[in-house]
Image 1 (cartoon, rainbow, N blue to C red):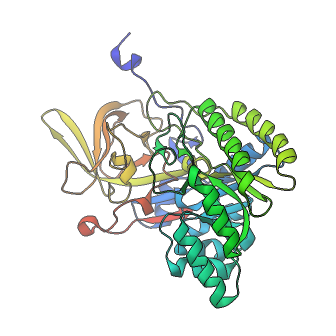
Image 2 (image 1 turned 180 degrees about the horizontal axis):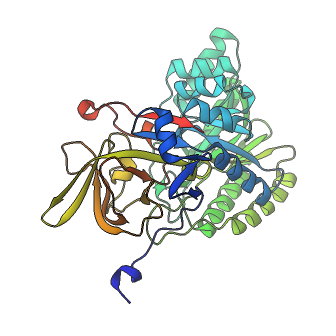
Image 3 (image 1 turned 180 degrees about the vertical axis):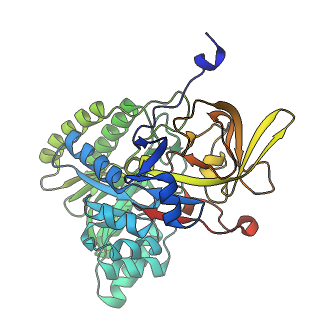
Length: 413
């Protein structure tokens, strides 16, 4: 068997249909969508895929479980507005994201605010809006007490806990060990006492042990351990628990050899935890907080080939897009060893002519790679390069001003 056939492959990217050799986005052929957008590069998000992902989760998970959207994955206002009508709440990580969430029409009582560096202005806005604040330090409690003394408004708060464990096998570890996020579990009883003394409206606990995990058993274990820790910490609570946010961690397959997450073990675990919560925390909501898993597979990044060149036998397809718009696809957003995202020539999906090519952007740095030595349909100037799995941590996670190239746009179709 040839080495190319033995090498790991990307998981099938079949969420977008193909018609007459072109990808369809929201039912629109890619070249027509590019003409409608009026420029390349652009990000396109398919609202039908967003809806389908939430429906799939609803069908698999316990009916009593609340699904929140972590907006940091993609804060595009139109996308947030669409998801606001599908999920049970929105989690924000800045004052700017709070504005987008409020503009979407979601009930402020269903918005929560996490982040380790909330400013006084952020906290004032959050209290005035009436949203839930996940407090992550003793300083935040003292600041909220001063706001209460000054305005009379009582902050709704949950304690964000930094547990003594992380999400095993997670691409992004946000719990366990020394972390800037939350309050170490052993210090939480003291934090809860301060919340009680400050007269704040305590509602529950928030956990987030890690993100981008494709191992269902690891996610289930982190959820169980978070739940058990919440039960232990409940001995010190100043008021009954009304919300228990177990975080997220659900991953999507980006790289060769990765497989989609198996929801069944996670669903079974959450069903058991929901039954336990009904006994241990009567009337409390059990919440999971998902970002990438809700939006990542529903988005594409589209760039146009502006040059085709061969250097010492290697084909380079130079596009008008690049790392300044899609840092994660370039491999510069946390990858230790660079690996390719799923990339295709979006208007040549049925082409029998193949070649090994490297796709770059226009920036004068060797870091500006969208695909390195990938098997692609043979492409020419004017063709459209598409990066799959681009609905999360795309444009807003990229250095858009780097080298002052034209801006990228986003569309929801």
